[in-house]
Length: 474
Image (tube, rainbow, N blue to C red; front, side):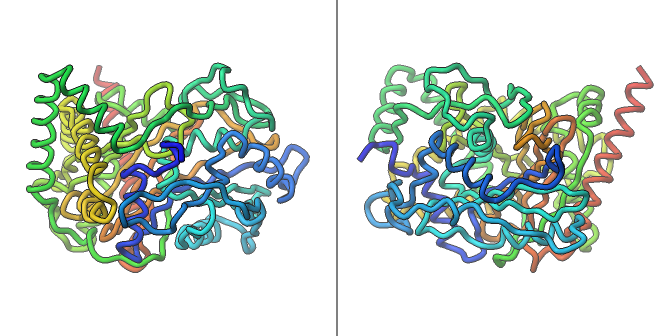
């Protein structure tokens, strides 16, 4: 069995988290909304299936299933060819009830993401959803997190819905996710298949040991960073909050759309990065939610887990998880929006420059050496409410308009999973000239998701007002 057919400990952890709690659904997703085809209408389901099945040659993993549906025992599950693979079982058709407006749309995708993927089959599915208002249609994807991470899923979308059905030669040049080019009938370029990826624990340990021997000072510094992470973010628990209670498996989704130009104006006027604007908008919204619930915002802030992409340039198009984490305190007790932004920006920068993402990656790497039968305990510890209160992620999408079957994509809604006892996750994705926030919540424990949505809108308006005032004063 090739080494890269076996799940890594990080990949397997998402299976373990799902096994440990019925409310944890460890799939990620993207909702791609398109205008009507140039001649009107939507593509036929047969056309979509045929196109996708041809594109699967670029990602053979999508024809593979787990060798065992559950983790545990003495070895991780592996990926094996599904002899019964049928494209019809993975690419389905559905129609929104009339009038197909935003309410029906959000209700439908909320229900879609409330159901687990079948572990007896390849762990993905796509629905061609028509009946949207104004003749629009959507491709709604669901993929298990053990198969791909958020950034990887953006690349896979490009692979599966390219302009040409024939796969690109492996030696052909390719561009990173941020450099997609516009095409009239699909998405280019196509990242190549990964070659020679070794993920076995023994190989990882050998590489780590060799690196430590050759770079002892770096190894010592990394050990200090790991220790600092464990003391600060594990021994010092995240604050208690109504955001962290037992959850069910039924989800609800809300969205917020903002012009990317306005976000860039905030960044330019107030300093920092786009990610700081996203984190600050989420901070203001979470503050509003806590206050509306009559809950005093924790003085030292809520702690956010912020996934960090650690893919190298040559990793584009690879499946599996290439991600680490930053743990950032969100100053929800701060009433002043400018001071709140400054605190968020400073804290995020401190965590990044302090090597925390690498330290978190090192901690995760340590779990590679734990037997699978014990690994679930470690996986739960790394996703526990003691470690963080909420997940917030910002994923860069294409800066240019994309097309499928000749129709322009007009919206992209990101979906990230909820770990046990985490009621809310916030994802933002940039696309073309816009930025979309996808708010993903447990329906039973977050009946007030509209407060969070409105809080993000208010917070962004506050930041935009500050940015305009700052620019005018210069």
